[in-house]
Amino acid sequence: MNFLAPYVEPIYAAFRIVFGFLFFSHGAQKVFGLFGGQRMTEGLPMIAGWIEVVCGLLILLGLFTTIAAFVASGEMAVAFFMAHVPSGWHPLVNHGEPAVLFCFAFLYMAARGSGRYSVDAARVGTARRV
Image 1 (tube, rainbow, N blue to C red):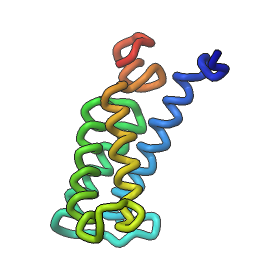
Image 2 (cartoon, helix red, strand yellow):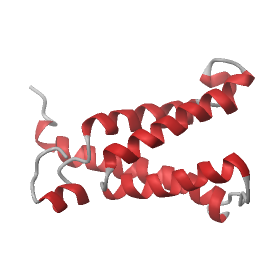
Image 3 (spheres, rainbow, N blue to C red):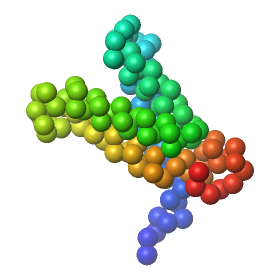
């Protein structure tokens, strides 16, 4: 028997919120120069930053999570192969483990949806998976 079964939805909400906040924070570093980051003004890092800011906030709130998480997962896959693989294929060698973790966490969210504790669930007026 899984003693955590009654807490699956709150745990998933915390998972979604934490990953959304961290993703937003990475984007805020690039776009706004916050959190000790360097502001990017052009090119792919700026585009990636805006994807991270927008998708991170949407995921954090649980609003259009399926779409936002799918886009975020794709961005992290592209980032891994473009920015990290040239330094070696293994994530520990090429320092790409955050990109891999984000990619698969967001892929899971894209498949699972927003969850019970989300803006999407409140918008639809139901506790079902959204």
